[in-house]
Image (cartoon, rainbow over all chains, first blue to last red; front, top):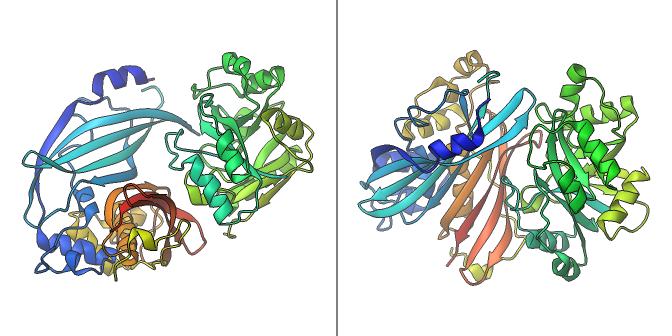
Length: 145
Length: 211
Length: 135
């Protein structure tokens, strides 16, 4: 069984992925429309305040969910997502997303331990932090891992 | 007196509710409970003092814990410093027998919660591990469980002769008081709650929409 | 219509939203979100993966919560939104989304909102909280 303290010591707060993203206006509009947004600032690219919905950054993900060498303790399942927008996302913005493991904790399940991992992506436009996205994953630990 | 015996605040890793907002919510929405017990996951919050908030809102606010055993999650009421030394609340593999025994020894009560849940409830473990001795009550109405999960909890209680109690298992403000427990007399402290639970004279209540 | 902080009351319910969970709308969303897998848009493909049917992506439920907030307060600025995916939201099935104000901060003119997405049986499939700043 994986030692959680060891896992935290080895993997927390280390950047493991960096990737570029672009806020494409057509995608932002479709994302907003499908979600049920009605305001022109989300639906009309000619609106002076046009912007992508604040949760649009939740669609960006790095090349990997977890660090490359992270122990293979089971399949990570999506358990939740938090977005902390820092300012509006304008059309055409080029963002850099940097990911690190932000939290690791455990809970019990019927078939053994469940390990929760929070992978945090910080999105920058130039030097400015524009959004933080936390992806909560749960791994049902494989027996004997 | 009606108490919600199972609530979480921001002190729990997955809790998003501030205790002050629970008080405000109960009064604003006229939730028909007289108070609630904070049962934070895998810990006892010895530091927080909610007596001012309790006075402000005219509510009873007590503290307990929700620990994890091989039979699933278990609520602990009447936590004392001595009980906290008896076992590690943060251990997710506590033997239920040890929790029950320590509670008995230190004037507390341990009671399995949401037993009908597929992953963290007692029903799922009984077939494999057998019926654990020493359990006297289980949460038969849980605000976060589905109707079928509550039914499984009630069936277990009926089969084994357990007394059923209710708790909302709220993690957000607006879920407090969805289920609760009615006691015949007043309860103003953790020790009085333990006494009332040990008397096994209470009734589980639910205000959940039927599912 | 502007809804400012002073127009809001603790305990206020946001107008309920009935989200469009049709295959066509979920397909529009998944294309915009770059999610190209049948589990979201094809019931048969999803069943082959052991799911009860095609499922609405978690981030779509989150975006629906944000849309409900904007319909209630068009100028609301989202500061945080935290969602827990408790159970699958099945495509083509009716759902309802509710929100209620559970905290108010005079200093920052922000409010906290409890959010739930329920199926027809009244089961909460997704829940969350959001903090929004109001004019």
